[in-house]
Structures are given as C-alpha cells and as structure tokens.
Image (cartoon, rainbow, N blue to C red):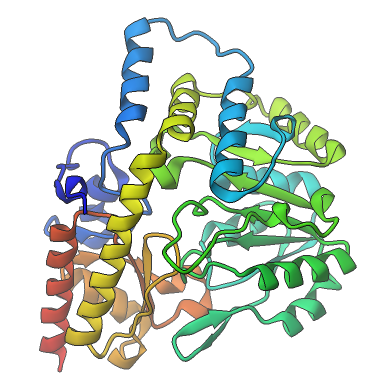
Length: 390
C-alpha cells in the first residue's frame, strides 16, 4: 500500500480554517483538529502541476465559457459512476453550499417547506431558514449502530413539501444509499411533485462493498425533478478554490438557475478553480484509487481502535466519506459538557454533534482524512481522557 499519505504536512499559519482557527474555537493552541471537512493531504500532482503551469502563464484574465471543464466532468461521471450526464446540463457555481442556498431561493417561495434528513450537514438547516423557508425534518432512524431512512414519515411529509435536500453519501453518518433506497425516495417525491436537490459532493469517497449511485442516473423518468450538486473539492482536497458544478437536466429549471447566478454576478468561475477541476477529473483517477485504500485503512484503524480501547464510545465503519460519527451517549455527559470534554480533556477538536440537528445530541464527528500517525495521536488522546473519566 502506498505510504505517500503518511507524510505530515504542517498547515499551521497557512490560512487554514481547520488549523489556524482551532485555538480560538476550542480554547487551546494544543488542540489537534479533526473538524472541518478538508483533508491534510496535498492535492494530486496533476492538479498542482496544472495550477503551476497556469501561474507560469502569468495572465489571469476572465475565463471563457469552459466547455472543456464540463467535458471532463462528464467523462468522469461516465467512467467512474456509469452516469451519462450531458455537458449542456451543467452550470458552474462557487461552492455547493452557495448552490443549495440559490436553489432554495430559486425553486421555492417564502414559507414553503423543505425536507432534510437529520442528523445532517449543518448548512442544510441554514440554507433553508436564511431564505425564509421552513425546515421539515425527516429524521434518519438509528438502530443497532446503523442509520436508515424513515420512508413512512417521508411519504407523509412529502405531501406538504416543495423540495427535498438529499445528502448522498450522507454527512455525517457515512451511509451510502442503495439503489432500492434511492428509487423509493424518488418515487415518493415524484408522487408529491417534490423537487430533489441532491448534494453528492462525497460521491467519489466510497469504500469496498458499497457503490455510490448518482440519483439522476436512475431510470425512473425523474430527470426533470432532480438537481445534482457536485465538486472535486472533497475528492481532491481543493475546497479553497470554491468551484462546483450544478447539473440540471430540465431546461426550464436550468434557465431559472442560470438567471439567478447572473443576477447576483456569480456566473463566472475562478480560473484556478476551473484549472484544478479539469486536471483532477482528467488525470486524478490513479491518485484517488490510492487515496481510497488509505482512507479505508484509516476507517478500519479508527473503528478497531475505538472498539478495542474506548468501549464507552460506539462507532460503525462508515460506508463512505472520511467522517466518523461517534456515539458518545454512554459517557453520560450533557452535550455542552461533551463538546467541552473533547476539547479540554482530550485536546482534540471535533464537530459538536448537536450542530447536525437535535438527533446529533450525544454524538461527535471526527474527520479521519489525515496521516495515520496524526489519527493515532488523536485517538490515543481520546482514550486517555475517557479512561480518566471512569
């Protein structure tokens, strides 16, 4: 197995939210950060080389319409995920969170209800509520350490909703939804004329025994009711370049979305973001294959370590993403004290589970997209702190 990802790259004083803001957020400069969902790995050489060549060119004027980049996205989706998307369906956006907010603004009206499935990525709440819409929760069901969708509840709530925001694969619980689950969700939404906004940014990060299925690739006559949002940022660690893609097969919806991008003056792309996107999707496959082996090794290491050394915390190996969802309920700490315990006692910076919805109370999220020596240090800190609790 490759060891390239074992290299520890210092990120302090590099303008990194994850590292440079950790001391302020967690109250100590000694905290080891495992929170923000970016990785502590260098981007693929193909990406850094393409960016270096673009810098060497020396002229950074307005970029032309980037059909070449959309062609790269199309080829990637077909070759890796068996989805024959059309480049004509694609629009560039400055990030998936921005695109979610704009889609809520464009395709719903004030006071409309939007379904989300908590515990879920916190901006799903704020993107809806900031636009004067109402969050309608369809909570995931947690049983025996695993999560599943509550389709009976979804069917009831779809009758009063205008949109559903799907997280696939799911952040933070790590589920990779099966074809039968996705088909059932689509059918419920179709029956109730609910537009689906599918955040599939983690789609490339899926482990053995599981398969990411682009929702819009399913042949159910649903293409006009699905908007897919994706980006190379999680896969290739390019989040700071703020470049994502909205894939909208329906021409009317696409035109509406394009108009709002133009009205807000954000229809143009960052030249470096587009350069990185194209290089990643055209040449980053072999690097990703190595990364997935390493990340799955991290997931297995984390799961085995916690099971063997910290039995008071429960965790299931995620099916996808580089995020572990830690069930800390047996520690019997109120949520505010739980978050403080990890920062102050264990000296690790994790995401507070309560920020993912009230269903996250008793949980914490840990980002294991880092060199294994760093992960081992963090887990040992947690084990020592938990043992001192007892």
